[in-house]
Structures are given as structure tokens and as C-alpha cells.
Length: 320
Length: 255
Image (cartoon, rainbow over all chains, first blue to last red; front, side):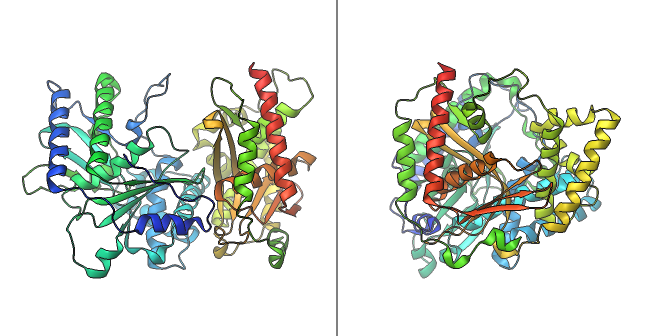
């Protein structure tokens, strides 16, 4: 797997990250390669989940790709908190800012939360972010908003947005293979940019036409490449995606590091191996696996069902 | 207040492209033989503890009323910077802490205070909040203020991690000239070590972003005063020395 890095001494950092994101594609993934990776993943997941009932579902996301800590605390079910809400709200802030640059995150966050609170008045189903926000005291709401502002500001500062072609903010993918309904594969992308040659011509090869930017947390772990590879895998398998990303750029704002992964068949293969390892761990710890049905109300509401041409997966996409 | 935070824009320095790398190499060299078995986390408090000549006591890190006051005022400072409003200080500050699982022990401490102690804490929070609201300026949106920004710098292959959470960071990333400012809010009496905390934060930001901030400041919610200074190379190099000295002491403690 080839990994490129960015010159950390050059300022502004955003210029280097943007150049890494937008440079012309230097790798290709053929349709055949993609199908082979997908077939192997489905077959292996099918073997791993054989005999497992349909309601014993497991979810594989970038967090699951990390090695479990030596003393794994009891996994708690998902709950909204300022930290779990900050990306979703932060992405809303960045989208608003992208449309109107006077809407800086401090103001955009206020509007985003107000919109969710209005939604909570009409939709009282429990478990969603809107209902959670509606139950918060102003002091707690301020923390939620502050976290989103900080996250959004980091993302705004990370890139030179004027150089991005048709940027899409928030591009997550949830893949469920029809043959292996027990497994939900989730990947996330924070910004997707159409690559320059494709944007200029409006034509060209159908695949390898964009690049994904992902904001990571903490510092790069040994699994960083797999975590970034998952962003490519999710986009590659989502029939609604118009392209397999040419590269994934990961950025860790807390330590200022970045990593560039050109997406090749080899990257998808290695990431598939990591996904299968994570699936094995999750199955071994079956009682701790979080059933898909226990995801939040917001997730359920935002779930959209789509069919591939071969009548395959159920797809969910949300910015969280 | 704004002038103190902003400093003199005309004097903001060009970024020395080799400075951040040089500071990092200095730290890496100093830590090259360090090994503690598991990663050592270095925070401003841990450095203070390590460098203190006072013998440590078992209750050194027990929660006190002063610590609770600091946490409550940090929450209110963050709220005021973000929303520009505080209506019910003690209630809103406690709600801000309650939503964070990591603060549960502190919240329990406050809830368990005697009525007199709680009233005393509430009075002080109200007083400091009034000072905060009357003295702290509304920052221009273009300053892009963000609060509680966490920085984590791994060194020595991850054996040592420098960690800081900056109360308020302003300014856009550098394009060649220093462009960010750091503000730390404190509820207690001014201490000499407050500046050392800021210098540590300036070092972290330099290592992370590749550019030193132009200004660091401590805002005292107790008095409404601000203590600000320009960031200099000497400030950063003395902070490197302090980090290395603290880690050495921590290593002795581990061994």
C-alpha cells in the first residue's frame, strides 16, 4: 500500500492538503478489480456469519478497525453527547458556510441547532439528535454548539476551498450486502472534491473522478491506513457513488498530521482484510455487538433504501 | 481587552519555517532514550507536579471548591464566547459539566456540598460571571473563535504525548506570518506558573501548526484582568526545556 505524506513545514498547511486532495489521479481501479474485491468480501463475510441469526447484526466502521484496547471496557450503547453530535452539526455548519461565507461556524451552529429544535416539535420520536437537543439545558446546548463550532472551524481551515471543484460536504456510506444482511459496513467522508481534469472536461472515465477528505481524531494509529481505506471501500461499493475515489486524504487536526492514500486495487484488498479481521472480532464478542436496530432514530429516519442494478444492497447514508 | 489580545498587528512576526521542526527535533533528541513502558501523557498539571519540589500527598488531586469553581467558570467562559449569553450562571455551568461524562465526579462533588458551601460557591460564580460578561468583549466572527481545542503531540514514537486543551484559540492558520492567538481563562489568583502554562500551549500550537501564535493571554475571571504577551522564540525554547525536565522527572517516578 502506497502512502504519501505532505510537507509539514510548508505554510499554509491548507495549500499542501488541498494540493494532495486535488492532484490528478495517479492510480486506477478497474471494474473487474472492484468486483473481485466485493465478491471476496461478501463470500468471506458470508462464511463468518454463517449460522448467525439475522437479528445478530454487526456494524463495521473505522472505529472497529482499530485494535481493541488491552482492557476493553463494556461497550456502551450509542448515546448522544457533545462529542458524538459535533461532526454532524459541524458538517451542517461547514455546508452553511460554503453557501454563504458570512455564516461563520458560530452563527451557522446557532441556525443548525434552531432548525433541529423546530424539527423536534414536529417529530417526537426518541433517540434522534433533535429530541436530545430539545431536552438540554441552555448550558449543555452551549457545549454542543461550541464543540460543533470548533470542529467546523478546523475543517474550514484545513483546505483552500476555492481550489476545490464541486466540493460535497458530508459523504457517508452504509453498505449492507444482500447475501450478508447481518453486516453493516459504514464509511465516512467529510469532503469530496471532483478532481480537476474531470471537473474541467465534464467527461472522462466514469471512475476515479474524485477524492475524499476525512477529519480524523487524536493521532494516527497503526490502523490509520485501513481507516482511510474504508472511506474508499464504502464509496466504491455504494451504487449511488459516481466514482471510486482516486485517493483519500486523512487529516488529524489535534496533532497536525496528515496521510494520503492513493486508492488502488491493493488498497481495497488490504482494507478488505482489515474489515474481515474486525468482523471476526465483532463476532467473537457477539454479545457486545450493537444491533443495527439499536442505532438512533435519526439514523433510522435518514436511512434511504436503494437497489443496485443487481438488486443487491440496502444503503444508508447520513452525515454522522 | 481586545487590544491586549490582538497585540500590535504590525509587529507580528514572519514565521520561521525551520522553527517548529527545530523545536520538535530538540524534543525528540531529548527524549530519544526515554522509555516508560507505556505512553507518558504530559499536561500542564503533570508538568507542574513533576517539577514541584513539594512532596506529593495522597489528596493532591482530590477535588476542591477552587477546582470546582475553575471548572464552572471554564464552562461559562466557553458559553459566553460561543453564544454571547449567560442567564443562570450556576445552573448553566453545572448543565455544561453534567453533559460531559468525564466531569461526573466534579458534578457529584458540587451536588454534595453543604448548603453553606454551595451558596458560597454560587455567589462566587455569580460574581465572576458578572465580571466576565462586563469585561469580555464580543469577538468579531472573522476571528473564528473556537473553544476547548485539544492538541496532542506524540513524540519519541508515541512514548510521550504532549496534551493541552486551549480555552480559546483565535485567528486563521498562518500563511507566512503569525496569525493565531491563545487565551486561557482562570478563576483563581494570578500565579507565575500561569505564564508557563501559556508558553506550553504556545509550544503545542507551534508543533501542531508549524507556526507560532502571535500572542498568548490569561484572562482572570476573578478580576477581569488580562495578562498578555507576544510569543517569542525564547518563550518556546524555555518551554521545550521545561517539558524535557518534567518528562525526565516523570521517568524517574516511573522507574
